[in-house]
Length: 117
Length: 115
Image 1 (cartoon, rainbow over the protein chains, first blue to last red):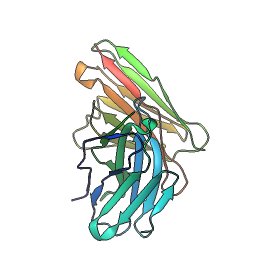
Image 2: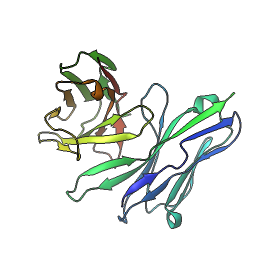
Image 3: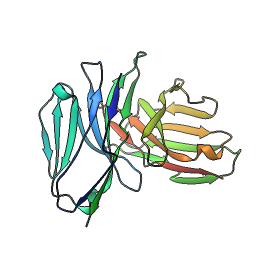
């Protein structure tokens, strides 16, 4: 099976706390791409990061960091010193190639993050 | 950066009428465009994939005759919801795949309400 699981449906933390959003994926492909997107209340999807399966280096961008571990098929996202503006739904996604050669993104069910002032 | 413009952002239509949603890539050529539907508090579900100049590929369970997709140029794809019913009310989002490596740019979405 090829799918993305975000077990945390909703998380609430107090501002300035750190928070980690979990993402576990399943795929038979050896080459694949993982993504994280942010969806604020306005609805548009904001791209956060893309990572290919051959690059297991962790990445840090400001208050955001990502931990990619192929051994556990996880691609977790951590926000440090959270801010109210971080409140949104966060989606993890996996790029797949179908049997017909078509590509598509399969999204997890999302994690709704609420930062409490 | 790559920008995708999606219009309208909100639309209310009467049951039985048709609604067209446009998705335009403003500063790049989109070889492939994707249409997603998102119900409240749910994930994005891919409806169909379209390549410029060819017929769209629909996901299982999506009615081709109800959701008409046209990708007539490298910068424009349209989704027409025909004979809309209240259960079609949803948030529709398009995404464009450019020529860059595995980049996807999303439109801002269209909230459709069928009354």
